[in-house]
Image (tube, rainbow, N blue to C red):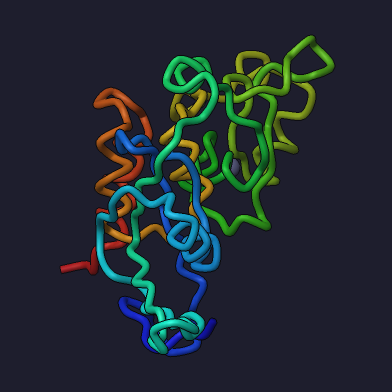
Length: 217
Ligand SMILES: [Zn+2]
């Protein structure tokens, strides 16, 4: 198997763009790489494709016809079959907590001073400290810069006279898939957005980051 062309990437050597896999009803499931996508095509598990064409991949030569197979991989592919538990399980889903997705949830902003930092300069703050019975879950943790986290120490925000700039929340399934994405394409983002509630704080944070990224007039 080798790659002949690719689309929508910056350099010819870039095959790292992830593909969004959904179930047949269009519910986002996971990120896969182009190899997984080709495997799904070969095993006839792809029901339909959406989004844009990412890669055109040449497979082996068919012994009978002498033709080389070509698989076109799109940015979003819907696959047959369903995950055990389905929608009900996803509704109750509590994603695992890790710093990478936590920092992305909070748009890399310190939730105390509101300043944006690089991931390596951020920390996980327990709003109610573990030493005071706080838990290590999405609703009790926020992104904090080292300075604010040190200043807060083993205190609650009230005890430290500090204020959170936003309320922490547990991402739903689609939000968590977005947070896990390395580089989410516009069409994939649009697709995921359809599964992110209108009231989600993530929508607000995303629109803020887009505004901030826009060039100054
Ligand atoms: Zn801070």
